[in-house]
Amino acid sequence: MDAKDMKVTDAPLRPVAQLVAALEAGALDETLEALGGAGGAQAQRARCLTLLHTFADTYGADRPAAIFTVAGRSELSGNHTDHNHGCVIACSISLDMLGVASPRADGVIRLTSDGFGEDVVDLHTYTAPDASRFGTSASLIAGVCAGFVREGHTVGGFDACVTSDVLKGSGLSSSAAFEDMVGTILSHLYNRGGVDEVSVAKIAQYAENVFFGKPCGLMDQVACAVGGIVAIDFADPAEPVIQPIPFDMTAAGYRLCIVNTGGNHADLTEDYAAVPREMKAVAAAFGKEVLRDVPRADVLAALPTLRERVGDRALLRALHFYDENDRVADQKTALLEACAAGDGEARQAALARFFDKVKASGRSSFCYLQNVYTTSLVSEQGLSLCLCLCESVMGGELAAYRVHGGGFAGTVQAWVPQGAVEAFRTLMDGVFGRGATVDLRVRPVGTARIL
Image (cartoon, rainbow, N blue to C red; front, side):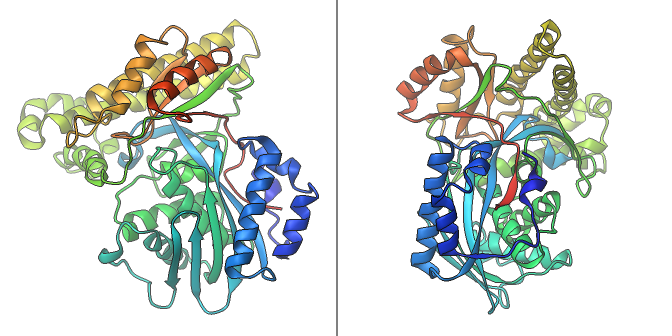
């Protein structure tokens, strides 16, 4: 499915009761099946119906409304490179955030998140960053709206209910999906669906940086919004170069398994912030803002003086950045070769190169980037334990494995041959709890209005 097939900009809103009837009649089953959520179309239809009934009970059954979806994401390569204008490979995944929204005329947004209550944002009064609201979902809503205004788009009030199976604190980007959801709703309710996915992603990053108070890069928002496997070069973050890679890992016999080790990202803002800050400190020593603008040879030549100026960990993280950028380039080439190779030995050789670089990325993240556990709580090392099990117990059966996402807590990513998925699940769920292992597929659509 192409995302453009789901973006009919002039389609009218429908009363909630009509949306319920269409779902119950199976009219959206083909679309829901293509989105690839757990349990297939039947389970996803039930999710949509539950959300519509929640909206009707909360905001009214007679409201004209629309249904929206935003994918979660998985970073496949390029760990902590985007914030220094590096390169990544990422994909949207078959876990998503669903939303039902209806416009209102008073410039107020009321958004109820399943399990988190209601946020109320007045667009007339919450128009600038407020440090007392940093870290709240209300700040993300206000930030996305301010970003829309900043870019010349139309904003307005709406009522919405959202629910998500993108695990919070899992490295699958629940916060980016939330930001992209607000932007997608505004695009369709007030801009005829005309704000493209990359623009929504850029505005979402602005909201997180400026209104939420977290200095994130752009990769999460782009990967959630665009869909499929994409290689992204952030040399110019205002105009990132996005290249789709149309390779089907599921058809090739591999499943993307994410293991939730039980850690949470809630109190780790300083750990995350230190990574780009230390990399940029190395760049600043050369009068530059980001590492992408400093040649690796210059850093190597200046190591003795840089050790005293920025410290060893900053240097290790900088060297990880350069090596990781090289790995992304190699992996992109390998996947594109696999796309062109058909089903023979050439494809398997290309995939082997890709998987080797996945494991190399994981080793570099552990040793040099140092984002597998937080030094503020060394007794909790679920990611380290999971990676150890991947290597020592199932190393001969897995194609590749690495820390997933921002790190410090949360999840491990593993590429598992189809025949080994159940053994992998049994091992990991036995250690980290039932349901810890999630078996995913790459989703072809990022953000969309479901019609």
